[in-house]
Image (cartoon, rainbow, N blue to C red):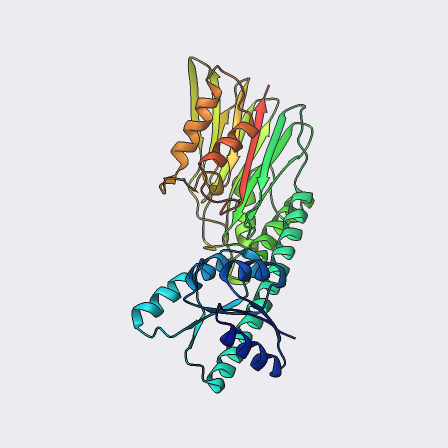
Length: 379
């Protein structure tokens, strides 16, 4: 049985609506003023509120605003009962959040029809809210599953840390690192276009394929070869039109050489040197995102890793941040944050400090996109 709350300071109108709607089979409660009405609405959580516009203490407009600002009453329909008929008055009511109007004097057939329509909208809103909650629960479970697949931090022979914060809609970020043998470390971070499970599933597939090394005819020690194999395997025409960017590197701890290739992904940032001579290298190679074009080509680059260097690998969700002042933070700002935190005085950047600094400027909570940040410290 639908609950209806009538708020009116006129005893006659209030009683007329109570009896009339009760005969229609509704559970009707009444309040004689706006303050009492708001208190009852918070307790009853009615499907529909019919509220007089002109009342002492709190007007119907003020009651409407407070009801609409209450998340617990998000599906409650709010009707203003009024003799005011001008367009400007109705615009004022709609701007306050009113869903409909009932004109005085009351015409019962119109009243019944508007109430039925309002209750249908309430039911639809509740159904949508239920589906939204189910979807959010599924995305939260998917995010937990992705997190369970990610590798644990390591301290030896390299110190590897990470931060992964899924967005509310769950993006397509994923990363991994593992030893190909006792000397070679493979490490990558990828970001599938879009959000939701359709973006997450390809990332999980890539992680499982690379971790199990089941792609045939591939040299896992050569990043460009890995990207070519992934591009052949994950063409977007066969993957729900999903493509992904990726940065992939292989580190030889004997020669201290890092070989890397990227496919449309942000550059990895290598910081080396000391406080007075901090060197910043952007490690990126040309290459289209994986899955976009079958004929895409990828190349390798190599760099030497000095002692006490830090390598940061990340997705664009780390730096494409809408700031509180409305402007967009960017890659250069993020790199500046990394270098500043490394030189005051020179220390290896703390990932928690970096995350907190970005949270402080982020106008969205949680992040709009997945936040994925890997840090490798080379002793």
